[in-house]
Length: 377
Image (tube, rainbow, N blue to C red; front, side, top):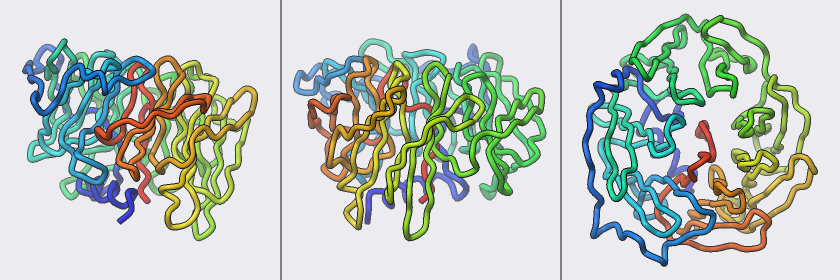
């Protein structure tokens, strides 16, 4: 079974509807009512300050811990550049964690066990504190870039999305507002606090202001994996043609969706582009050809202003993304077909293999990548 199939099987356990990467809840209690609980480290299972686990690029990395690629997830982990790391044990079915955009020392997760809930954890010295917990009942959820507002499309008891309405949650007060969506389903936020959404029944993406109801077209209809430059001045996305002869391209565009640059990559599957912290480069992974293409992918770095594309590592595994270090000098790939992580210098000059700790590693801060949708196939 391929790695992509393994990951999809995991995700399908979470929901029979559309599967999204998420971080927050449906019914949020005010912050002052949130529970407080200290969770100690799992030593001796988890070493602390191991110099052999030091890594380049500074900052700290968040990941979903697992014994190896394809293994069940065992909670979330954080690792510091000096090799110190912490782990929060699994509670319920834990989906992808994110760095909380409202507080760089906090992490948001979603548990989909017998009592689905979102959780907020704060890193506090040698411990991790549970500082908030909110009931949830669905997965199509998106926090705003500032982390203060959460929007979600409710689902019914059978897991089908109720696409006629949208709910908005104010995290500071817990107040929930419901508005009619007209069938629009959000897939993320724009940097100026509007929603990027698409009609559930089919059609092109729009920028939607849920407070005023204003809708404006956004880009060509076949965009996917949209991500924004840190300053919000432009976006990157994938344009793909499927079927037996897939062809992919990376596009760059302005805030209103107008494509200004296009980089064709030929008959390859292209993964989500991620922006460097200074907003001048994007990194993306291009799958190799044939049945072993998941093992023979290439990591690209594209200089957006100079329009120069460079392959900085080959072969690597066909991972969903490459994460940037806070200093912009390093990239991290979950090289799962070789059961390791791989740190790659952004200029391609150096590659450092690293022990496998888990899936979907991402640096803080800034978090890389931002809110992303998991491919359904």
